[in-house]
Image (tube, rainbow, N blue to C red; front, side, top):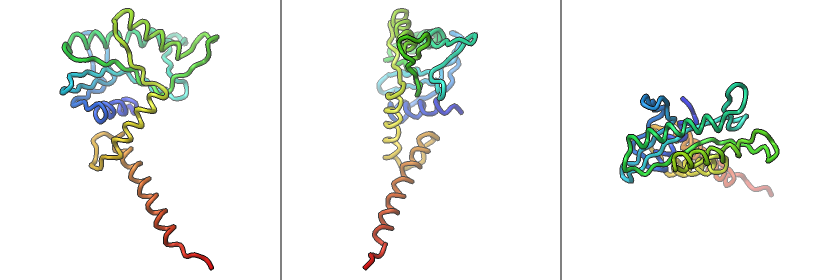
Amino acid sequence: MNVGEEIVAAYLQYVRHCEFIQQNLYTPDVQGEIDVVGINLKKKELYVCEVAVHLTTGLRYVKDRQPNNVQKLTEKFGKDIEYAKKYFHGYKMHFMLWSPIVKSSGLDTKHDQMRDIEHIRTNIKSKHKVEIDFVINEKFSECLAELRNCAAIETKESKSIILRYMQVEHYLNHHLKNIDRKNLLKKPTRR
């Protein structure tokens, strides 16, 4: 299980209301794999998501011991876009990169992950005329908050382990607050 892919799958299911979710979709005709795909049939929307959860290093793909974010993700999204356009005519397509930690090293540095994001955006837009939605840093956190809100209103057991974890967390916190209030009311007052 890849926890990043599980988070994205839960988000697509519970926030974007996708009826079909597939993780690690093998795409033999374009020689690749898509991390998470979601389909919302009612709205005819397709979500094609790449997920990179690198906690201490931030977004960091490497080739020959050198950062390779731009080439790796430009190629990966290029294949994703080819696949989606081939099989999902008539669908509104959303291409997303999910990465919780993308670091900025500064303007004068040779390698900067935020600058890599801009290069990826430019490459994909110029070659494929497609915008990538970068769910990174604060936006990743906002999406987690949306998912937590879904967990807070749902009491039935979820098939998503991520949503179930968030349900347990929410209801446990609620329960503990109630216990604290009751204990405060029971304490005798001193004279």
